[in-house]
Amino acid sequence: MNIPMPDNSEFKARDRFERMHNEIRNRICLHDYAPGMRLSEIELAEEFGVSRTPLRRVLVRLEGEGLLQSVHGVGTFVTDADINELEQTYRLRMELAELTGKLSPRAPDATLLVEFQTLSARSKALIDGAEPRAFAQLNMDFFQALLQLTDNDPLRDISERLYFQTTRIWLKSVFASKIDLDEEVRVFDREIDDIMAAIELGDMQAAALIQRAHISMSFTRMQQ
Amino acid sequence: MNIPMPDNSEFKARDRFERMHNEIRNRICLHDYAPGMRLSEIELAEEFGVSRTPLRRVLVRLEGEGLLQSVHGVGTFVTDADINELEQTYRLRMELAELTGKLSPRAPDATLLVEFQTLSARSKALIDGAEPRAFAQLNMDFFQALLQLTDNDPLRDISERLYFQTTRIWLKSVFASKIDLDEEVRVFDREIDDIMAAIELGDMQAAALIQRAHISMSFTRMQQ
DNA sequence: CGACCCCATGTTGTGTACAACAACACATGA
DNA sequence: TCATGTGTTGTTGTACACAACATGGGGTCG
Image 1 (cartoon, chains in turn red, purple, yellow, orange):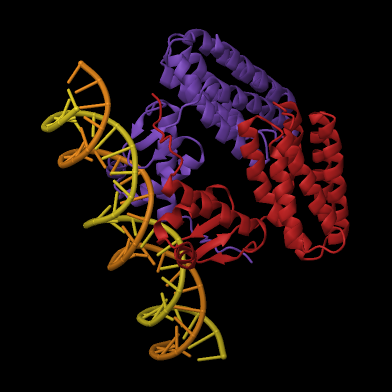
Image 2: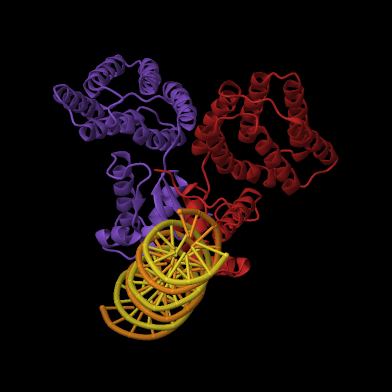
């Protein structure tokens, strides 16, 4: 009844898939591929040194994650979202963030604490003049660090999935200068410090609530 | 910036993909393909009258949904889950069910009410001696009807995703006679009637809470 | 001038042959 | 008897050629 799994961790094909998937997902998230943009299967395949077949496997996965959409005979496009879908997703993300503190919260180990401190330092380095892309990268890294505060795997997967669905749309507002970047960076820096304070007290539920509040405020600022 | 979409709804390729995906997912959910079972790409491709290529696209999607796992040179297997993963997923499903009543609850239209009555009738028909598969099918149909009580699309998607991840494992307990099927059917029949009562009062939040309670109890009975 | 048709072009989708890989049976030797 | 190597078989993964499809431009007819 057990599914066979090679104990060796070489996984040539699987690793390649994972690399390509992460790389393309990051590019979408960081607006290297902006919403609405068309991706060329041929160019991407050439870049990664593979044929279209394994690349398409990655694209199919990303389509399942709601980040891409393929249209026969036309192209593969980065999906966009209107304000209504976005609001639904944000409201759900808020609830999930709170659940992070309720379902299997996990206190961070020493390694993770150091990682948070590094993130905090990176944040402060951005306060005096930041580029949107560097800020987006930091935001993503911080989010993924936060995910390690819960042991509930499905919750992690889903939160990550929704993060990647919303963050590029949010970033669009930043790029369009609808949001004041410097102000956003300052707010984010406070969020990191507040959450770190809660974590160091071992109060994971408080950390989750702070995160929830910031997701909410982030969406509010975006609407203005 | 808009993604092109044919307004015509013929979509030959897309429809075929959707059909194959739903069919295989249902088979997994109803234990036509039990957890741990190996699927033959060649046989499935022949059955659907296509080559391996488009079929593999479906399998990749199902792998992304956590229902399948492909191992190079060995086979494609229906995933199983141990009790720990299952508990995590069930706890998350409970919370999401409650959220259904909070985030964009929607009162059912006449069509949906009729559908619920039909489901109730089907349930009562099963009370005197039911087959596990028919019960599983009813359970699935009822769940998908419940999903229409919220307008929050991401919440719907995720709830459905998690349902398909857990229900086949739950059904395994039923097939293994760890759970008394007749008793399970009676409990489920009450759940339908209780939820319908709440819905007819327009109290969607109560309906959601009842559902949450039943998800919880279902998992408890399963553990015994 | 406008409406329509047709075809050239570029894209995604499909079929097929082959490569990479893992499991198993069997022979072979210590 | 057991360990080990080796070939066979069947599976998933990959490459490539071609089909299906949508788009846009130019031509043609009204």
